[in-house]
Length: 497
Picture 1 (cartoon, rainbow, N blue to C red):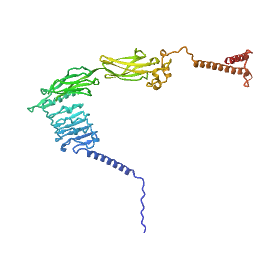
Picture 2: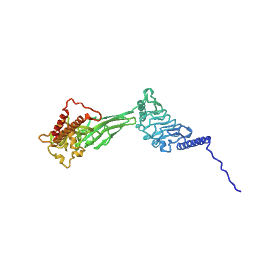
Picture 3: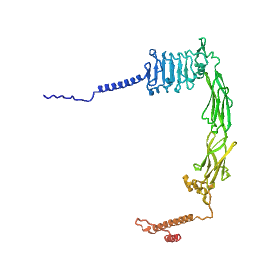
Picture 4: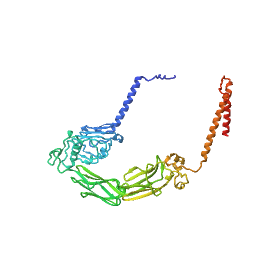
């Protein structure tokens, strides 16, 4: 017996089955995504791509919530924590992981301590709410680098001391008077005191004053700057400056503090020096720019090059600004509308510019010497310059192997001649020009030949036109016109020969 089975015929899938499979796939993907997110989110919290929410009091959160993946932490902008009595501290390694964080709220919890470097990496943080916690002190250094729009600290048992007076100052500067909040602390007698009504005594923000705001010194000499600071508690004084090359030493253990700069270098001219005084209440600073006087120094002088005008480029350092003078072949150059000095860039005590020449000719060839001078000294440097070949002979600069000829600038001698104006053009007389005479003869002969050809054509038309097969008839009022034109044609041919 032979057994066989017939395979049922398969037709196209029914629409209802296709829709069911599609929605099943969507729910599967959504469930997998939520599962991955939930696995990275702490058990006591609810997480979304930009927010972490931890408010379940039964969860008893002990440490600051941390997402597992770095890519997920960087997207979080808002963290809300409430009713977490066992959460007592915030450290740098906790909040610093959320570099994109803008809003941080920890309320109705057991927060007692916030590290001074807790928000060192959270430069985007704008809003902080630590209300109704157990904070007795809070350092200003934790927040001084942040551009906060609001800092809410109500309901904390702050101890009345100078360490919290900065909070009062912050609220007075950041919050409008119409919306100002009263801020309380607890004194030694366990009494709540309003800082708005009765500030903590003997607490004052520092005030700084420098001994001078015109710090000038001649290069190679020494100078001392003093800084007087007041405040309660006594502030800590420090000097701040960037890239000070000269040797220096400071004494901040005395008041006024001092900073001595020895053998001052000209490279330190323009350096900003600041004195900063800081205590628990706040900080203050005062700044001055160091000015160093020194003789001129020509640091750059190069061969001329063609631009909109010809330019002999140079760079000069000096303070005060040097006076610049040019010599042409050892003779003082009088500047005019055609030759002048132009400074293009000024960088502190360094000046970059050009001696610009408008359409120079061979007369301007020669040695150029730049002399820079101020009240502390002078410097000079020379450079040869060649602009155009001398029509009367060869130029010594053009023949010099170390000097760039006009072809090295990418400009031919004819280009220079075309760009000269009439006032600078040199006319040569007493020497015949054979090329110009030949051209004149060719022009005259060609013109005469053209005229004669035209007369021949007219003669043919007049002579044979009256018997034209097209029926053209030419009436001549004067019988001798053709003969006259023929004679004229012969005369023209004789002249050309």
